[in-house]
Length: 127
Image 1 (tube, rainbow, N blue to C red):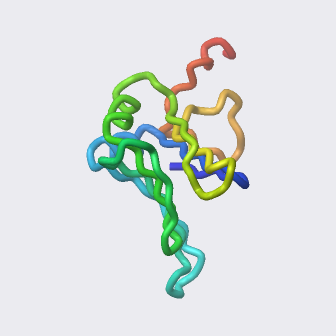
Image 2: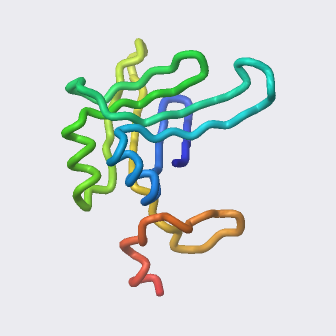
Image 3: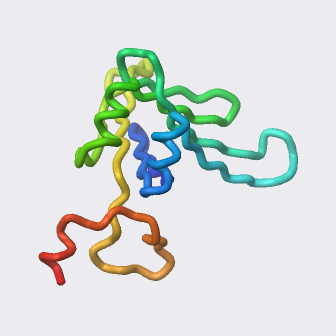
């Protein structure tokens, strides 16, 4: 799973293996370790929830995006590319959240790992 952020948005991109894990367990997460001391690990997680709307939170260095089960199931089982929502965060703009299937790049780039990405729907048109 890849994470991309800006000042008021967060985007998660899941490859095929991430989505398989998410479908089986209802949770997928990644972590980055910055050091060996307590609190030096950063975690971002996507999980299913019984709530009626998509939510976002951060607690002790763990970012959690929670998708309602029905919405997650529809996304997993169809050709739907993404789920988009604005989560309330106390600001007038809110936090824009985008969760999407990770497509292979149309132009290969050094260092990019597209091994388990979804085939890009425009790949045949570019070839």
